[in-house]
Length: 591
Image (cartoon, rainbow, N blue to C red; front, side):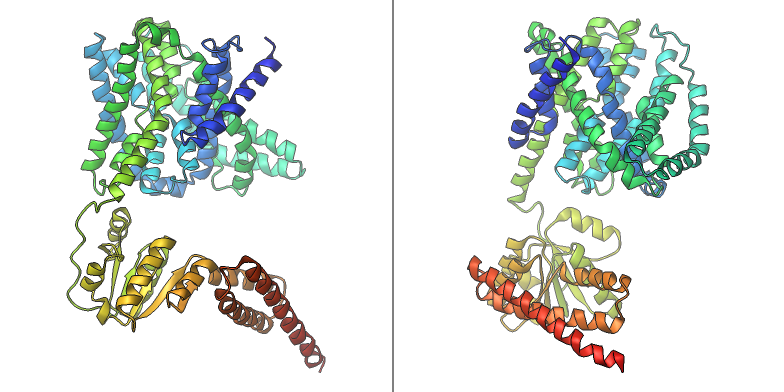
């Protein structure tokens, strides 16, 4: 089978299956794995040498680590040091010890084999977890940041793991795997690499060729990766270091945009190659043993990580999603198992079984994300804990919702010495805010009993800063019905949210993007040389016209045709006002 036909078969399988799996909310990774099984030896057998394809596709992991390094500026790495070297070390030691002991006892292996296998299986799949979290828009959540930190520590721990393999006497040639030489080369790259890479990209950028810049970006990632592999370290580590060295560079964003298409394509190819290399004959001959190993790996890692995270400070909210996200085995296990299979530390049949168990654990990983979502929805149906007891002294202001907007309002009130009571129904958000010294209470403002406990009736102002539109409207209706004389100032996500708030009698509302957009407009006009007086006049006219438009459209926003017509009329009206003012200003300037 020709290479062209091979790639055509791979792309066809991916194009058919990946969208179906994504639509079923099973994730793109499981779609790529299924595509690999479909075209591999246990499907249509359209690929002659899946193992060599796997080695090629590992470049996807290399480029993924390069992009991760680009995002990790040294200042950010220092800020994450507790999660990386605290939580990351706990996960590796805890999971590695339990898994290693279980395998040594259950499979009758030596202590050396238990240490190596435990350490290897404690690693999770960076190539699976990070794209999945990004796809689900959960990288910025608490458990998303902690997952990133643990995966980063795991990538760093590859250095001593690779150094350990020759020392355990697995029968591999020790030449070329001197850990001291690897550390010396790594230190040299860190010391001089930043300046050298900066000079290289400045030189390339002078020619203004995008193709040449792409070639330089690939050379940077793959060149350092190859150098690290030559001295016995991980290719992924070399690419990661290259990214970190360029994290503070002015070329960072362009490099990320240049590498991203190659990274996505090669990562998809990597997971297809994993699917092709899965020995399904072994699964057919000993299904109970293989499934027990895969499920045992998932359950052990999830249980250990859940327990460790629960014992750590502020771990209640992120323990379960973190445990589910990192329960699978990692792609680096395929590398280690192929190495130990050549030696005498672990029998080849056991290495094959563990390789298939890791592949199955990666295939089951998207289902764990779905299970976590299901458990989260069940928990959301009932309060995870009793609402907090609120202060007995009536506040001047009550703030419902203490996220991005509510926190800024609270800080302004604190500066002025205004007493306020803030409530929010997100326990994770509350714990985060409390760590920074701000007082916020757990409770749902959509409950009348909580509003009464917060002494809303005695407050002068009720700030409605809830992010969710439907919950915001629910609270607005409740407050307006029971406290009709109370001043409500509401956050509106957009114009339609503002229209619905006005329907409920909330006449004071601020669209969350309006003021920031106006300030950006001021900055643009200033950069174009427009005078401050003219900018102020333009902005004032715009705000006045926009408020009139909001009032007119609020009466007709249910009728789309009327809404479009009023928008056109308002734009024409504003343009004529500005044009008239500009003409009137010309003689004045001439005088």
